[in-house]
Length: 88
Image (tube, rainbow, N blue to C red; front, side):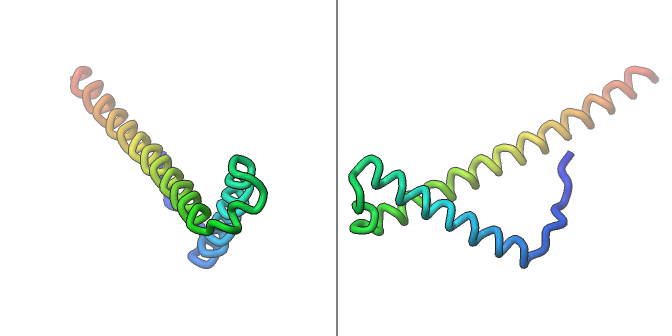
């Protein structure tokens, strides 16, 4: 069931910073791993592109999960209504 989050705006902002930091660390590590130590520092545009891609991927996954939950709720409602109609 979809529920509204009880997380405050301040906590969400704080979490956003942690998420950005995690993406930054992952970007530097991954870029340097594949392209050589220090490459990320020399190419900040790659760091930005990596972080943007990670954020978009997360957003896409979140929306897909939410849409699936909404669809399941509709299916449950329709099934309940159908069952009620059949028992009349």
